[in-house]
Image (cartoon, rainbow, N blue to C red; front, side, top):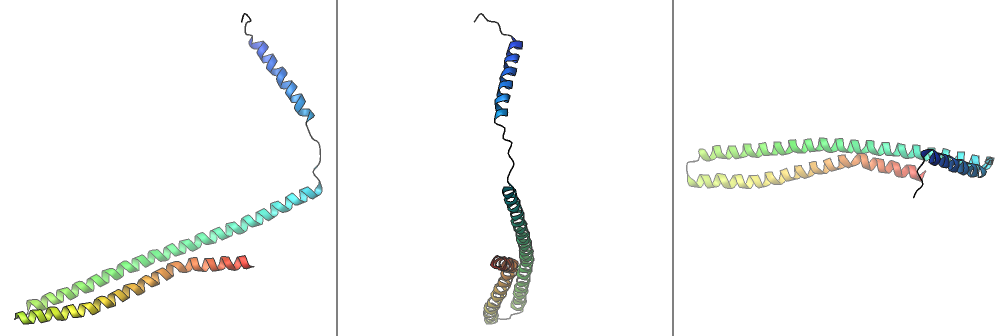
Length: 162
């Protein structure tokens, strides 16, 4: 290790190596033309890929639009459902208040028992009707929310059949 390091010598050696590698690389250079049939095939493939991309993009946009309509319907349905629950609660509260007023005006224990029994019998029917209202509204909300997606799937299947 008595040799001294020379940056100039190292740089010159690197240049020589680069020139040698570049010269060898030049010898691999292929100067051939691509046949017309290969170019035509490549162009056809690119055009077909573009068409498939456009159809896929259109289908995706239609699907996103259907999901947005579905979410809008679900949001409106949730609002309607909440309003229905508030309406039912208000009706039940009014009935309970009417019972309380009737009980306050009762003169005998028998009258109190009769008022409560009549109220309970009536409320069973009211609760059954209210459950029917909630069930019908829930079914409508589900159908309304699913309709845009159902229509989109039908359109997509029809497009595939063509």
